Image (cartoon, rainbow, N blue to C red):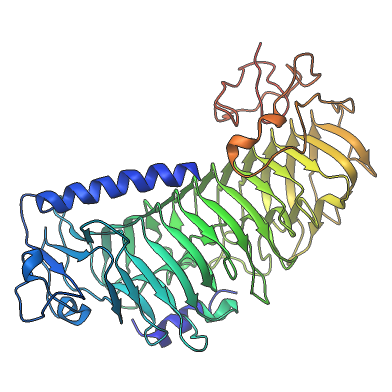
Length: 517
């Protein structure tokens, strides 16, 4: 796909876990290299220091030398391209050919040492491009793309299909993607890892796209993002089985992780430290756009800069049934969570933002506003813990209009623990319900809540969270807490709390921790 095509599409839209993943993936690739990767296919070796493109590439001592030699070969199911550890390449890797079910094509490394490095030097749109192919597994590469000046839409790795149909089983694992010098505005696209699907002749989508165990540093504009030409409801053709898991993102220029045009995407166990670092426009941490049934869980987002959004998490436009659970948001200048929709856009393009569920999350020292809510419907927020630090003076809830106000937003079993000062802004929103929440500390105008508790919820050590989900023991309840057994029963409550404890069928506890009866 041309960069012009990408630009046209983009204009439509304005750790411990990592260590385990990396060890597992590295071990698997080492095993793959040792045995040739499977029972079928040919293994080709590439060595920029010792190879020769006149060789046949089928053994380390007969390795090819260049990416150009790899790019000219049409690969077959079961084939493998292995780059020698510690070698470096300039240009773009753009392999050809597709695998098949049970016999994907693989790219990885052989030997001991650093990941092979591919540097596009800002002269190509990306360092790795998979285009109109399927059944691919790529792992253990270092990708970078920084030129002398910014290149709009530049990426580290890009997967794109157009007029293709369904592309199955594309896995990107254990990649180190850094210093991608793309544009800084949303419309300029670009980022660490991107996928695109579309076309006017044949509807195209991904089924089985996995991005796992990757490390992204200083990628502009975004981290891990997608695009789908078929995002409007009258052309709806969502990608399926998209999983973004166990990645670490640091110093990201704009948005962190954004699936677009997906049904059932799973985003879990990711860590984002520092987003919207260089974007002049709106950006947030982890959020679906025009997606259904997205699950966002066990992620940590911190250090989002600025207040043009700037939240750790977001349930966004034209999305139904987004589930945000078991996440940790802290020290984000824009706040914890944006739940929004553009009420000016109606069917057949949009069905609105309906049915978001936010549960068992912990927010600590998130700034500007905790929840920002605009033009959405039927949102449920329950069993979360919100900590407002002593130097903060913010609205915990801020209802704004984006072509309309929210309707039917329900808050149950949440702990709003304020060491600073908090207030509530409802605008012209309708149908707000509060039941069984804790309002402890300095709340300027708390909402009506017949079951409200204003006593100390007796958390172990509120405000003591650090880096990592394992730093949050301070948000557990202590014995004798008034929150124990005082919660409202929530249907389909997820069955477990933040730490994996069972939720009582009757008389659950208030907050993200369930001590049980």
